[in-house]
Image 1 (cartoon, helix red, strand yellow):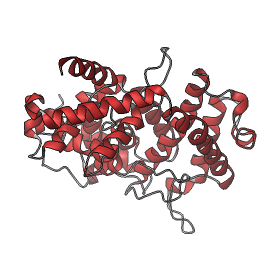
Image 2: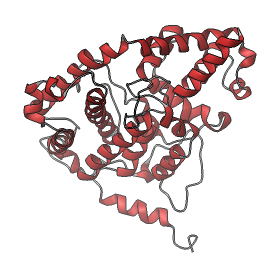
Image 3: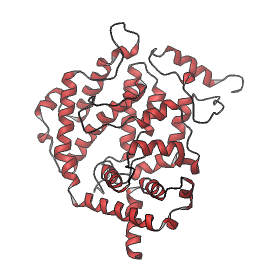
Image 4: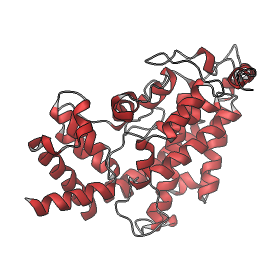
Length: 346
């Protein structure tokens, strides 16, 4: 009987063998609202399940990563990106003896707040909304408030911190990196970059934007000439460079990072993507069409607040915030279809 044998407590006991720098679930800072612990799952395992069963997670399958409305079934979506980040992050966390459950949960929730049409949609909303729009802040708003008809998911502090602080600026990796308050959160942050750098190269080649031969020779000489070799080089280097996180080391403060050689090669690939893929793609017709859709929806619903779904009246008094919540939650397909319907009706 589960009542006689508390499975959660056994799992918490196993966590005591983790690195002293790992976050133990029974020492979590807790939730926004107190709940009785689950008899089977640790706090972080419970959070993971709540994210996977959320509507926002389900919608990621129809949200764009980089390429908008691609012709083909093998392009990365926001959902497949999330799963790749989770896989990379779990591998690193397991190797460093950190809390794999916490790491996985942050990874699964980190992009819940992304708009339709990827970063194009995020840029458009940020230009329109007077309070600015950032997808990481929207991700936190989703898990704190928007899910479950205004109740939110009531996640633990550590998961919420990792979700909020995963985002990076345009600057080089590890530079102006921002602060995550757990090593597990740092693992997710770097795993996010490892995932998108490598799958965006694949998508760009698939889309005919670049060829493998265009990749900077200085980077691929260090990292490898294939997708799998590059990911393996980055992940193994992160594990080796961050080895102090496994246990106390008087000479080293634990941190998640890369060696200088791998970091420079990774940053070279990242800059190449900005110059040859992201910026180029942003100028294409599909991207401008996506911006137009977001602008149309934003303008229409700010003028016709009564046309918002009823549940969005629960999320604050500010009209613009309600509109942003509605648009940011849309999939590419839904936003496109709705914009077409509204265009025909006016």
